[in-house]
Image (cartoon, rainbow, N blue to C red; front, side):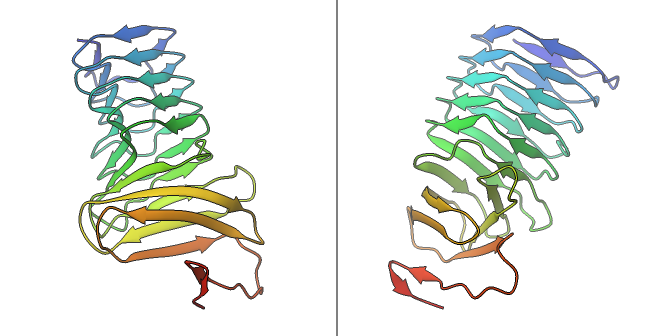
Length: 219
């Protein structure tokens, strides 16, 4: 096994470790205000980070080649901060499961079988992905019709693209093409028939925008 933290006491620091070839890399079930910085977690037979607790910091970690989730934010893992982590070559890059208030910013989530996995079971659960190197096609697995996927591709302009689907277990492959307040453009397709709903915030107020779908004017 890797590192297991099950004590109610928080404020643990796990820094500059190489954790590999375990059933899991880090298993965090209790305690808050823990810090995980500059660790490399790889080749776990389950997950890299398996997280049940809240208000922790995960920064500058490399999470790669794990058979399950690179980062698994489970029910109870709320209001965590993930900054500048590199998450790649896992089955799921990062999964948010029935949790809320987590901020995932910077770094890179790429080259996983599914880069993002969203299974929140409620529209009131909201997690925020910002500027995580969405520079090529990314796979987004949305498990239910209640979850919203929140993404912003810039750290300053606060433009948010929010996505929701109408059916269960849909994989969206998305490529961002243009991202500014004058023009938001992306290409995507789903692995099965579904209706996608989008909500874009942070654009210019009192400006009339045209909406195109497959190059056809829709609104």
